[in-house]
Amino acid sequence: MDSAVARERALDAAEQLFYGRGVQSVGMDDVRGASGVSLKRLYQLFPAKEQLVVAYLERRDMRWRGRLEEYVGGRAEPRERILAVFDWLAEWFGEEDFRGCAWINAYGELGAVSGRVAEQVRAHKQAFHEYVGALVAGAGLPAALTGPLVLLAEGAMVTAGITGSAEPAAQAREGALLLLTADVTSAGAVSSQE
Image (cartoon, rainbow, N blue to C red; front, top):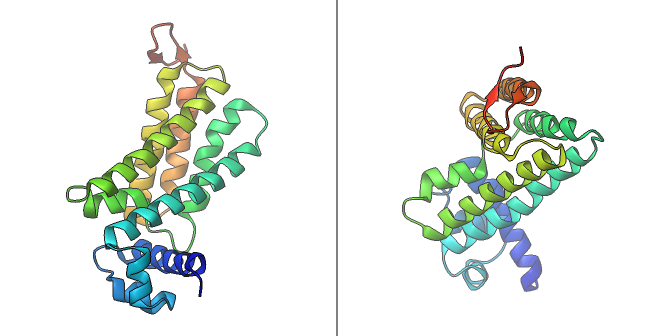
């Protein structure tokens, strides 16, 4: 098996195990067993477990954001694209293997002890923030709405992961709709329309 195939098999196994069981409860031997990649080859590809965790998060980030962008891109109206973020979250939360946000989970386990994992988590969250910011700008709305919309989405991710319910996405969508229909003053503060 060549290195590229071995790497993908190792990452597939790591993703399933790390996301399903948690990073700290999974050893390299577990990844070896699930991937069929020898332990020697696994350590050649990823000399430390931390490197495997970072690679798993990087690859998952590209796929996660790609799926989100594809879903949201199917909406023609700019404000509907913003709300589509929450519709997509509802679909993701409803998946059988949903276990919360992989980056929040990894940060909770390793953020205090692994600078590389913390950096990868921050990069993912920053990219999501920038994506929502681009949607807000594309809808001609004030940039001040980006932070509250991101917090609604992030809060929904945490709550859905804990409760095992897709309902937080619908609740966050309602909050987003309220923000989008509010009167936004020139100072950037949001107040309800009268």
